[in-house]
Length: 127
Image (cartoon, rainbow, N blue to C red; front, side):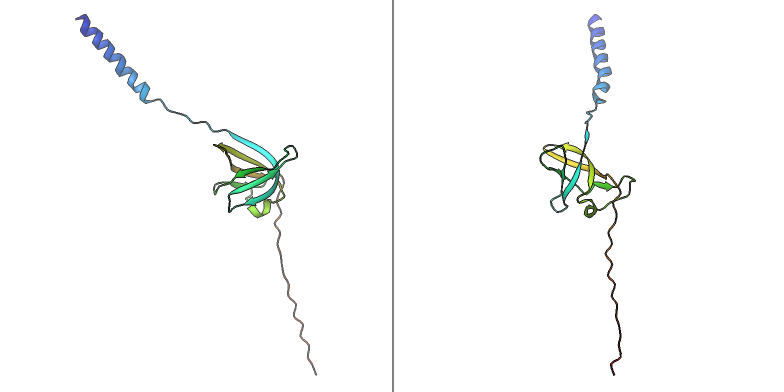
C-alpha cells in the first residue's frame, strides 16, 4: 500500500510540473540604440547610410532596409534624397556584426527643393 501511495504521489508531482515546463517561453530582448551625426552618403542600392559625427574620428556605416522609416521632427515622411548632408539621429538594432537602422529622424524640417523651368516664346513679324 505504501508503495502504491508513493507511486501516486510521484506521478502527481510529474503531472503537476508538466504544464509548467510546457508553458516556459524563451523571450528575446532587442535593444535599440541611437546615434546622431550628419548624413554623408545614402546608397539604397547597397542598403547603407553613412554618418559622420563630431565626436567620432571615422564615419559610421549602417544597414538600411525597406522597413527603415525616415521622418522629420514633426513625423512627416522624408525621402532618402532629402537627408544627404542633414543632421539626423538614427535608431538601430545590432544584428550580428551589422547595425540595422529602424528609424531616421532629421534634426530639423527638410525643405523640398522644386526646380521649375519657364519657357518664353516671343513672336515677331518680319516685313
